[in-house]
Image 1 (cartoon, rainbow, N blue to C red):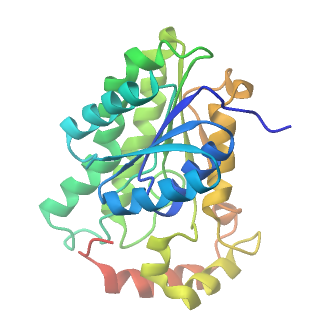
Image 2 (spheres, one colour; image 1 turned 180 degrees about the horizontal axis):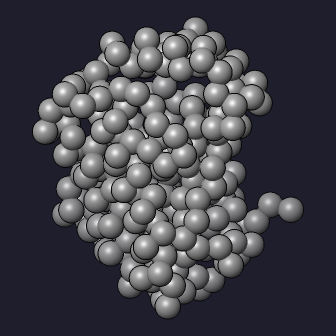
Image 3 (cartoon, rainbow, N blue to C red; image 1 turned 90 degrees about the horizontal axis):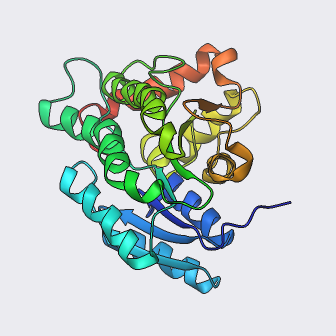
Length: 273
């Protein structure tokens, strides 16, 4: 039986595209009120229109979550619009592609701030609201298997930021457990998102997905399913942990998968995707 999130308010960072869009639409379909945080407002507005066309409730807020002030403003705008904040899903990431020597300081900081620092800023700002959530507050971070379960060459900066995010989840869970808030993460492998297509192209994405043990890349909907579970009452005994969602990639890693990815990543070094 699907759980209803009626009466719950949810912030989804990066809600305008890819994984964030899939998560936002899933929560809206489960009757939650969804605040779409996005750096490019037009993307979020498009998702809002999709949600409203399906009789859901959504609002948008322009926020660059690599900025502390924007994280605070996003939380307060949500509390004002919906009367509180029950759930946060931090899916946004300014991904710095490249290994050591191929990512400048500006890109390194943008990646680290949008991924790891933003988690700190969002949870810190939302803590008083999440502590008032009727069935317990939920903070869910979208991490990665890169930097946590494996290492991807030419994605060193990204893996470093995601590893920091993973450490934050484990430690922050202890900081806020007394407030009735759980903190968890979903760490995907390759997901067929807009960004993945920008790097790999459709042919590369299909070829890479075919090397995954379950036979395909993940989808935003796959990640959304895990988020719905971690936000539900069924997960209230789970905190400080990570759900690895990689189709078995980290238990069986054929060489051709790495070759497909490395060819594409080398062309993207130093670029913002």
